[in-house]
Structures are given as C-alpha cells and as structure tokens.
Image (cartoon, rainbow, N blue to C red; front, side):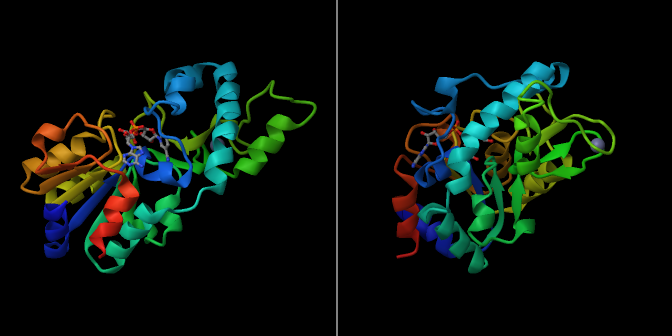
Length: 247
Ligand code: NAD
Ligand code: ZN
C-alpha cells in the first residue's frame, strides 16, 4: 500500500482498470463472488442470443432484474477517489469492464472512460446501431398483446435489438480496444481494481502495460490470475484502500 501511495504521487500517467469489484460497494453484485450473478444463472452466449428469439426474451427478462440494482446505484468512495485523481490530472484513462455507468456518474469526462464491455443503460440495433432506451423495450415486451412472446426489433431496419453491452462470444469493440491498448502501453502505472482478471482480452491489458515498462498494482480482496507479475498486490477492500490514497 505504501508503494502504491508513493507511485500515485510520482505519476501523472496512470491507467486505472476496473472490474465488477469496484461497484459491489454501490450495491451491484459482481459475477464471481459467492452470491454473485453467476452463482444464480449462467450467462447467455452471443451466438445463442442471435439464433433464438427465446434467448433474446430470456436475456431481456434477466436484464430487467439486474437493472433494479443498477438503476439505484450511486458512485461509491472508490469511484470518487478515482474521479479525484482524474481531476488532479494524474489519470490518462479509466478502462472499465463495468457496464454500470458509475464512472460517468462520478464526473469523469466520457472520452476518458473506455467501456470495454459496453454500457447497460441503453440498447442498440445490432445492424444499423440505432439507439433505443430501455423504457421503450420494457414497454414493448410488457404490452398485453406481446407479454414477453416477441423480442423487440429495430423500427428502421428490423434488426435485432440488444442491450449495448458485450456478451460472451461477441466481438470486442475495436475502437475501445485500440485506445485501451495504447493507453496500457504508454502508462507508467497501471492499477487493476476489483477484477478477477479472468476475462480476456480485457485481462491482457495489465500484461501489456507490465511488458511495456509500467508498474502493475492489483487491488482485489482475493488473489487474481495475474498476482505473480504484479509489482504490488493489495488484498483488501477497495473503498477503504483507495480512500487512504488521498490522506
Ligand atoms: P469478477 O466478478 O470476475 O471479479 C470481481 C472481483 O472483485 C472478485 O475477485 C472479488 O473478490 C473482488 N471484489 C468484489 N468486491 C470487492 C471489494 N469491495 N473490495 C475488494 N475486492 C472486491 O468481475 P470482473 O473481473 O469485472 O469480470 C466480470 C464481468 O462481468 C465483466 O466483464 C463485467 O463486464 C461484468 N459485470 C459488470 C458489473 C458492473 O458493471 N458493475 C457487475 C457484474 C458483472
Ligand atoms: Zn436497425
């Protein structure tokens, strides 16, 4: 921890990389902790979503359940400390696997937040990319004539509408990955926060940073896959650990 504090003081080219763990203190469960989303249901693969209307309907149903937590969530102390480091011009980019919009809500400029797995607060047509608000999708599915029998289709091109997140099996967003890779190569300190570092290609970014000369710090309450290559591993709670950076 002392190392992290010193390195943060010294650097003005930090990349912050966050996973679901940073948002648990805001009341959004992560994927892999006991009681997390995956202990309750398997993810729907992109290929299944594309090939079956039933999967699309199931996926919307799940989304509206998860949304109940996400809608009311507010940035916690961890998000706020990162926003302060950003305001102090120390952070070049926040790369996030999260889809909950909480880094935006904490006041960081949108062009400095790279959402590797998309954003769950709206939906998009997979063909023409037209944006749809979730209230519209919910109204469509819950309409008494439909009652969750037909998934929504694009009003312009009849394409499949999907939440603007990246599912397992779905290609990563190219532009975001490119910016994330460049930021990882160019930073001098890469801090991975609240990620089990199991989901690739996102988990390749800390490796890229380390291989290009950055110091790598991993903050997570339990061991991760990449601890052996980190310069410092902090197995503590995120909020209280980050709070100390400002004192
Ligand atoms: P993960 O669930 O695999 O790992 C989260 C890690 O954070 C775990 O190792 C856990 O021990 C740790 N953790 C949880 N709360 C913590 C705390 N308060 N202090 C310290 N450590 C804590 O998450 P991941 O690596 O981000 O991968 C899961 C995928 O699921 C991501 O791709 C993401 O897109 C998606 N997801 C996003 C959200 C969100 O947007 N908030 C929530 C769930 C899942
Ligand atoms: Zn369309």
